[in-house]
Length: 399
Ligand code: FEO
Image (tube, rainbow, N blue to C red; front, side):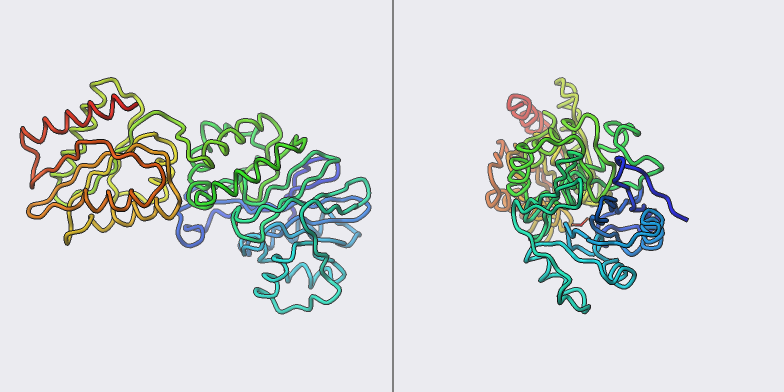
């Protein structure tokens, strides 16, 4: 049975939500599910904007059939070729054989890589600024490479002042009846997932997101229709501001994030003492996580939030503790920058965790290492406590 929502008089939400998938991209936990959004414009021509993941394919096809009624599908715009949005492309061609596909040159390269159907006479290749008249609506196409794949483009509809934004402004989380961000308490219930989605999926491409935001600033946008999560029609500046911060790697909070690894509890003890010292000194925004106890995607999201990062890690095989090593490398891969970092290392013989962390941070942009580095041999002693107190003072001063 169809389950559609009207976005405007002639634009419909035809996507669906998946609450069964445990790992998005087979990497990221999604305990609240995820939505795959698609939109159908019913103008003189009928135009579908993107398809969905195969998991919600049945719902999507029923939705389209219902909205189209006796009409056929004339065009389909492909904003993003990742399979969570293009999985149903072949189904669309089979059901609506006359449909023409609108995409850019890179889109069609990828269509050929993913599918075997005949493209002859089926594709309309567009480039930056090209227009496509559907009747009342005159869609324009804005290239958004690397937000999040090279072929990504977004579609602007000046008639309804909607930006169909592909992955940009998306979030994890199934849509539970609501389609609009103003139908839910986004800042309370969704913000964490939105940041986790952004930082892990698009976080690496801050420069490219900035380029898209710059282009978007020249458009009169009243509504943002992303490919995941709710549609924005009110308080758009809320999500735009977030994107501005995240894409420039500017922290949302002046606060301290302490990530520790600990095999027997001694290094955890050092992390806890540091946290207590900071709180006693008045730091209100502070979080402590065991790197082995939570999926890395949550930690990455927290790094995008806080101004200060403290790595508290044992030395393991003369390297950083493996899980911590992977975490710091993940931050590097995601282009994390503009943070103040502090280091607490531990070990029973040759301590080298801090040195190894420093080497990784040196390869990243604008990561300031605060001194002193605290080195704890086997367990925290009174002299170590003094060093931790000194580090807490330095962190505080730098906030
Ligand atoms: Fe939601 Fe990059 O796909």
